[in-house]
Structures are given as C-alpha cells and as structure tokens.
Image (cartoon, rainbow, N blue to C red; front, side):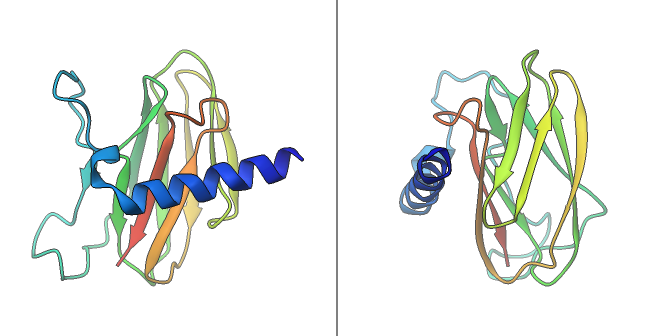
Length: 138
C-alpha cells in the first residue's frame, strides 16, 4: 500500500511539474539565493547542455534546489546532494531507480545515467509536499 501511495505521489509530482512552470518558481517574497532552474551555461535552450564534472542539488527548507536540473542525455552524471536542513531527507526517484537518505547537514553522491532524453522526477519521502524536483536530460 505504501508503494502505491508513493507511486501516485511521484506521478502527480511529474504531472504538476511538467504542466506548470510556476511550481518551480519561488514566491516573490522568497529569500532563496540559489536558482530554481539550472540550464547549460552556454548556448540556447535547443542546444544540448555542457557536461559538468558534478551537479549539485541542495535540500533547503525541505525543498530541492534547483527544482529543475538540466543535464546532457547519454552521459553518466555525478550528483552531489547536500542537505542544508537539520532534519534528514530522502532523495528518491522511481524513474532513476534511486533511494538514498541524506542526513541533516550531510552530503551524499549519487551516480545516474546514462539517461535517455526526457524528464526524471525525484522527491523527498519525508516532506513529499515540498521536496520535489525533476532532472531533464537533453
């Protein structure tokens, strides 16, 4: 039963994130200094992202920052997940087949890919209403 509920939450997260760009944008009064969306540093949106040595996702105020991360398709990706909160959170994705707990104030490294072009949702099981994100492989 728990798996079914988690699957429904993950599907709903992907649907919501894919259907509305405003979900990934912080409220105007937000004090977050980290961008919600990271694109390739050079080129246009139609070009493939440049492969970086490492991609970083932070957990801040029970949210994943950035909420959208663009990575190159067809490449193995190194993700460093940093939990800036005091409480633990989980990085979980059914599409990526990953489930790792990140302790409060701790960092973990997760390798994913090579990914086909597409969107891959992830979420935090401990705060599923706020800890949501998507990796976009181009």
